[in-house]
Amino acid sequence: MSESPILFAVNDGIAEVTLNRPDKRNALNPEMLVRLARCWEEIEADPSVRVVLLSGAGEKTFCAGADLGRLTPLLTRSRGAEDEWDEALLADPKILNRAMLRRNDFYTPVIAAMKGTIVAGGMELALACDLRVVADDSELGLLEVSRGLIAAAGGVARVSRQVASAVAAEILLVGDRMPAADALRVGLVNRVVPASEVMPTARALAERMAMNSPLAMRKAKEAMLASSGVTIPEAFGIEDQAIKIILRSEDAREGSRAFMEKRTPNFTGR
Image 1: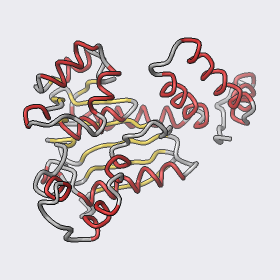
Image 2: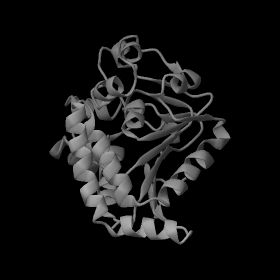
Image 3: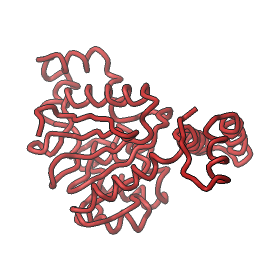
Image 4: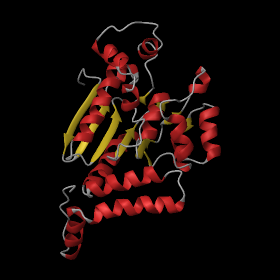
């Protein structure tokens, strides 16, 4: 594997982001967070990207959360900055939020392909993704309460909106790990497959989505996020604003033409 703790590449409309510290359970240190934030910014600025595939290197852990030996002491000022990554994080603490997609305006769809343990900050990253494919022997959880903390990098806010309230309470307040089969049952993940099939399954989803109109997918995600927690009439208004933009797009015209001509549409995102 490359020495870089974050691998990033874009091919055929699919951006691939890989957490690459398998020997450290892909725990998030300052360099990873800074690089992750930059990846999301690059993706957001690249109109060729239609979907993102997020994964973790190795077989044992997608991500174990924060690197307690490096990140936490820096954030609590128990240690000073020792390199450019530490300095960048201290100079702009909101990098952590951007790295963890703790925002409501990132509209490119993200698929998480996860094997092994998915806990703490790793689970919060998973919750930030739109689709989740996990290995059948994986375990997921927000364990922070057992360490005297809460899942404050998006975990509390997101899990309480993504599953039933009783399930969210158990995840947040008990702090146990949940088997992949249970996560599928409660709607926390989309697919549970053997570990060897995680990447092929996630990649197939990404390739399928890359065939869609990128503008339509982004607008659908934007409307879905904006509609969360509002009244039905307000949600209808959000839909109306989105479809007005879509109907004026080249992609909408191309989609209709391709259907009538019985061919695959060539979407451009315009």
